[in-house]
Image 1 (cartoon, rainbow, N blue to C red):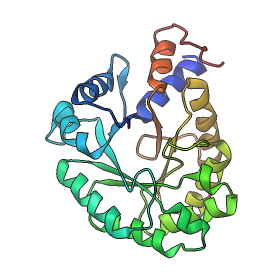
Image 2 (image 1 turned 180 degrees about the vertical axis):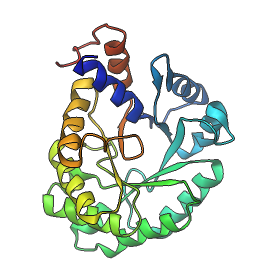
Image 3 (image 1 turned 90 degrees about the vertical axis):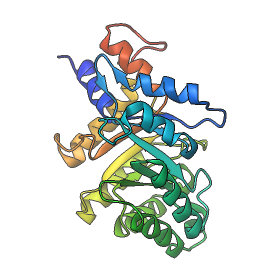
Length: 256
């Protein structure tokens, strides 16, 4: 198997296939869930707004037995400094059937010098999750910008229960970058927490995914990046994955 094909298969298994559009309809979610099951394998999860969780769970196997998990977002996309809101939205998402929660860290508060409210948001959300439910904490690294702030947010999130650190909402000008991912991976290594990394925003081609796999393989070891510890949040990446795996070339090429 050539390197490009292997990377495409790895990216497929790690993919949180995402649709977070304000105009999403039940038909859009049905199409998303159908795309999550391909002839080459399945994605790790679908990620949808909370109001679509019930639909996604029903379509993917509502008893929780589906291999494609249902993720949703809370405190999204603004990252409010409001632990009560984040907890309330998390409870509702869990009641609807969400299996993974992607919560936005209050990054503006951290920039202003308040890390305590971020700790509260993470710990309060973690406290209401049933066993087996993952908490991914979105740091919004493109807005934090400073590596010291990215590291501080990472340390806070890991110390208060994050199962994954996630780069971005995908709703800001700068989203996932290798530099930010490197800082987050080092925090995970130093914490010895067993937590994972999710990169999101701007990963559109297999070549983009390859950059992150190379980084993770180098820093964490070649066996680390399983779907239990590494995810890619994207909406358009699946098209390029399938083009590579079918021997075709997607628009713009695979980048190799």
